[in-house]
Length: 180
Image 1 (tube, one colour):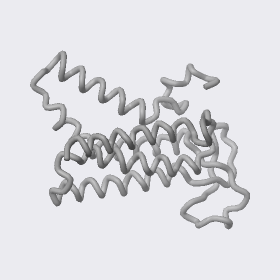
Image 2 (cartoon, rainbow, N blue to C red; image 1 turned 180 degrees about the vertical axis):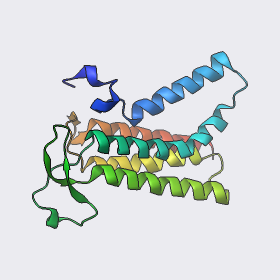
Image 3 (cartoon, rainbow, N blue to C red; image 1 turned 90 degrees about the horizontal axis):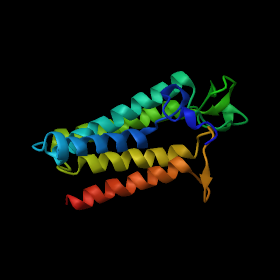
């Protein structure tokens, strides 16, 4: 909120997944309504079910490279399970023991991807995979938000991105409900 010029700078932590998905949906809708009316919008969204965790994985990988989306500092690595913590730098380059948000985000992306690939392979959740993928990804990001240490405006005890994650969870649920 103090550096609005960084919103469009990927290396400064801008353009989170909510913006990417919203921009992609808007672009796809514009393409369907204005440019190429024969596009099956629902089919396009269903193909994005795999893209959500793939883009999420790449986003967390990029955060690991540019030190964004870092975990909250902790006192001691031995206070938590080894899979949850590590010594890593923050955006300012200061190395400290902290929650391992970037690897956890990448692991969550792989798990969501596996679930969606299995659903496609087995024929499960036909016409609901986009919503299921969006819901699974959103739940993971809400939970991961509790471990993050990067600055974010808070509202009613939750980070702003957690509220956006909850909104995306509701959108995914609405998509699944709409296509029941």
